[in-house]
View 1 (cartoon, rainbow, N blue to C red):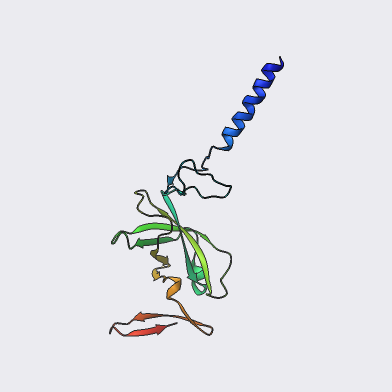
View 2 (cartoon, rainbow, N blue to C red):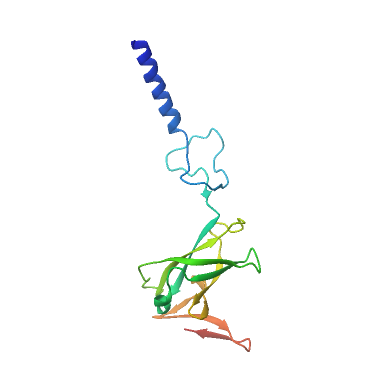
Length: 167
């Protein structure tokens, strides 16, 4: 009957409207703080909250062009965070970017770090050691690198406590 068909069509329309208001995440994770109060009118593109998968973190860092040939997926890294002094977060390189930044002469590298206890958060500043062959090289934050014409350098403190400029 036409009444039954009308009721089914109305039900389908209402189900579609409800489905349009349901937000589903593509993965399990931890929700951040809510940006809007309940009942607020939102528009497409508004950020309601953040969703982070915290069990495994990706750590992006830059390496100098001169060591690029020594970086391979699977290499070990050891990361530390100022928030957790003395704690080391081991990880491994999972990808090396295909380009060298012409201004900094560095290439981006991505490592995966296990975070089973959930200590690490997205956006944290971390220090890391990357094992190259039998030596460990420390990286420095990009902000610590100074450029003078075409030369890049950092300042370090020598054994006598004096500051020296190092290329």
